Image 1 (spheres, rainbow, N blue to C red):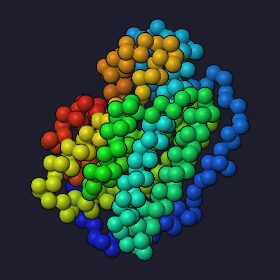
Image 2 (cartoon, rainbow, N blue to C red):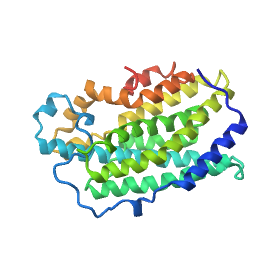
Image 3 (cartoon, rainbow, N blue to C red):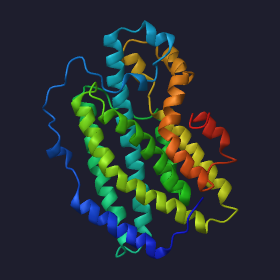
Length: 299
């Protein structure tokens, strides 16, 4: 069931989020001890969330190799998160550019941009600290994504933001509570989860509000754009180069991950909440169903 939101509700929500942002925010430069030593023997992500977990290839890997894969995979997730944060900032600034800057809505959008700047720096520092390259998405995805801030608008724009944020949020919530994971990674995740909750509230309301004014002619494009963007997001989370970094055959390992039921289950588990929300609001359907299935968000 969708709900109706009035223009006045938008300002009330934005004001509450502005107050919350002023009351509680983190500065990763101060709140994280970047010089603390990494703990030998601890993983960088829960074992069962590694993309190769449960495969025959995983069974052949040594314990040291598995831990190293978790290190490179968390670097991939963080650098892909950074990539999407930068796209998100471009999309938010596009919205502010055509808005009244004296509204609380526009001011909160700018506040969120400030949050995302800190998060992007935090992700970059974590990748550097754990000694991994900034993998990011594959090159063709990186260049193709430049179109999103140009063609993205309405519910699909905010829906795309939510897919990336809520999948990452679900993975991070589990990781930050797992004492088998490096303290540095857990702290980075904790900061991101606490601040991202405000962003999710903001974007969810924008999706609901946008659907109220969307025309029937626009709906197919919105569905297609959201599903296609979501597919690129989930397919980019783990860059295949991470497998070569730990001594595996990149093509063999990438193929094993893409066909791994455990990895599919992880993506579906992480995306369950946002997929229900998008479906309830009419954004899951043709012509986007093929892309949704390829994203692993729908079985």
